[in-house]
Length: 480
Ligand code: ADP
Ligand code: GLC
Image (cartoon, rainbow, N blue to C red; front, side, top):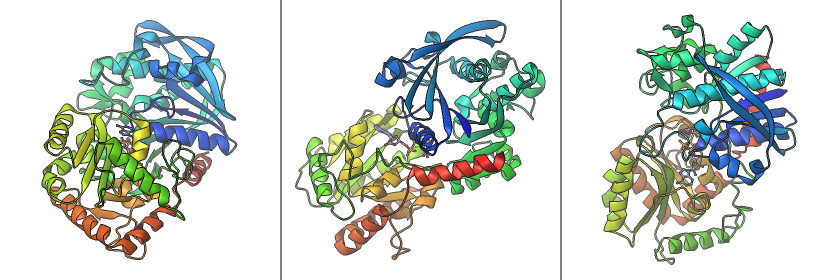
């Protein structure tokens, strides 16, 4: 199949979260499986600086209609592997800056223009290159207007650019909501502005466009596909999602086994596998040492890596601070994001520097060492569309502590409730829920044979993208 993907993040070029991992792995795996894959990505400064992209050839000049003006841009192209081509949509004004969506304090004010421009540029490139795709697949709000813009362009030019379109919701909490006046920049007809179109409580929602107009809608776990049809998790879009229930599927993400494999991981001081866990002890000692903690510490080490946002349940961690301050354990957290969490966690670590370490930065190698060196990995999320770290944890023999939401339910079973099959500990997304999980972790840690069995079960699971991508291929084929 000829498959076009469009995403605002793509590993290994630019990443703020799991979207980059998922989009990057899906594209590469589909290419490995013999499909002709083209991925569109904004030409952010960070991407242009990456060695793969540095020599990218200029392919096309673009002139994109944005309301009553035309804006220029260019497409740069490179091919990082067989069957895989990356198209960078470049325009300095929009993408040559630090940060993807904002400056850390708040979102950029021109995000609507940036991503309307990006989506239009994808359509225009397909048109100029006469690329007739079988599937055009967009990810999240940043690219969700693509199905709408594509069908509109096809109609106005009298041609076919794509047989079918797919829109994947990686997180329905981010919807691309902008003032109504941004709509004119799309040059879409006014009849798309109503309640059956992009209108959303007096504003416009880009994600709503993708949900309504893509031929198929997917999200990143079966459980989340159900959740987003309810008021509790739908973030206001549950009614819209429910109208597409027949075309909605939850397909689990996978993990990139070339990057996340303890037997080959380039970021680890020692490698290990389920048949020989000695290297995991070295990783643990190194992890403690690098955080200024006693490397010979014998109690359980809890790790956590995430964006600092309400979603990730940091409030539950803070509310359980007496556990981390009082029990014989260590806590190592890596992340960055909202100031209130950065400050509160910084203060917590300052209160007990010999037990708790917080690092406020993006650090890919350290995220691998935390997965490898911890005994338990914390994911007390309020909601979690899929979640990748709980899968990395299981692959690395680290027991995930997860709340019972979204993809966490689909990928982790509770070792107390299901002693024969459990590979983690699951609890309700509340302060008391996490406390219960932490107490049960202490008991599990004290029972070494049981702990070893839980670890082994996690390490033997197949979370590979090779498997996960098959579900997408089947969906594409069925839609055609
Ligand atoms: P989300 O996409 O909601 O952030 P996921 O679990 O799907 O959650 O993916 C998060 C990804 O981002 C993981 O690969 C995780 O290791 C990575 N990550 C998050 N914060 C950091 C950080 N500070 N440094 C390095 N990697 C991080
Ligand atoms: C989102 C979700 C996360 C998911 C990721 C990749 O960022 O928050 O749960 O794993 O997308 O699909």
